Amino acid sequence: MNILTIVLGKELRESMRDRRTLIMLGVCVVVYPLLLALLLTKQIRAAEPQQTFIEVALLESSAPLSAYLTQHHVNVHTVRDAGELSRSPSAQEGTVGVAMEGSDDLTVYYDSTTVKTEAYQRLLGLLRDFNTQQFVRAHPDAAQLPQLSEQDTSSSALRAGDQIKGFIGMLFMPAFFFCMSTVIDATAGEKERRTAEVLLAQPLSPVSLIAGKWLSASLIGVVGLSAELLLVHGLMLSLPLEQIGMSWTVSTAEIIGLCIASASLPLLAAAVEMALAINARTYKEAQTTVGLTAMVPLLISVLAGVMGVAPHIAQALPMLSNHYLLQQLASGAHPGLMQYGSVFLINLLCAAPFLAFAAARISRPGYLANA
Image 1 (spheres, rainbow, N blue to C red):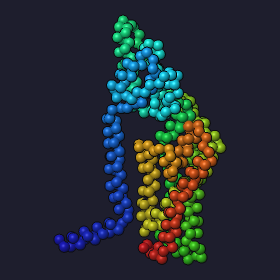
Image 2 (image 1 turned 120 degrees about the vertical axis):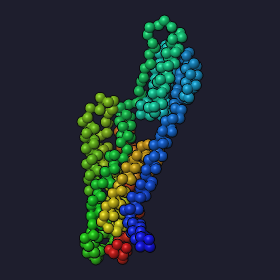
Image 3 (image 1 turned 30 degrees about the horizontal axis):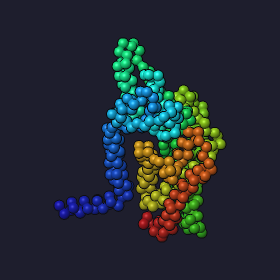
Image 4 (image 1 turned 180 degrees about the vertical axis):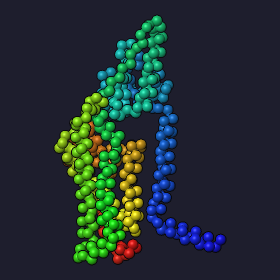
């Protein structure tokens, strides 16, 4: 039993020294409960009474409709001018305008890019029930039911921007994969092959050495990300998007501006991965650590898509600011140079601490000894 305890203690200590084991343990402990919590939260929200903000015109039959919708947990707000209903969905996010046409017909004005689909479908069901009940009481012998028509007030450009929002992170996440192999080979790979000793023996500062490796790896990511964005632009121009109610109005100059603003994202990716690879003890540990870290943007994208991110927060975060800029362009907006510049600077500023850590780590005497 004593020998078994000694062996068990030895193996546990070695396992605890292996950073790959600890990282995988931490990821599994945190990620799966978090995903379960998000799934349950979504189901809980779906089970709650749906609340939809509606503007109802003050016409002859508006009072009964307002009372009927209020009884079914629908928030109702009245307006005096029926003409405002067609403008309200665009003016106030998440609103739906309902107008009474004649005595029984209803027209619904909505913005498909902002209204919640489940709540909107539930609203349509309530309106159909109300319209039918009122009509049957007034015209019990009629052969034709009243009409319920829908008008989408959003533009094709806004719908394109909404579709881009659904692809959050997918277009910019590859920036973290383009330079991964180069970063690992230039850091942990050189240390494994014992060629790092030759570089460190040269008369150059650690900052210069790190900067050279960083820019070299980042250049690959910049070329790859720019080529990807240009390819997406070409595909969107060639596809018949009008068949699905969308349009792509982004100009070539705007997509080139996006490529320039997004050039700092591979710089951030290379800096983060280089800091992790330099801090790893072995080549395999660097592969595992950097590989898992490259999946963090995907996790952030999922969380942002499920929970939603306010525009002012998205503009202040790396990668999400790139996506928000693309979403604005796809929606037909024309951001100013300040927004392009802020996207570039946010990623670049976030890269600075990782570069400083990498330079400090490589200058330590115990770096080559895997200390």
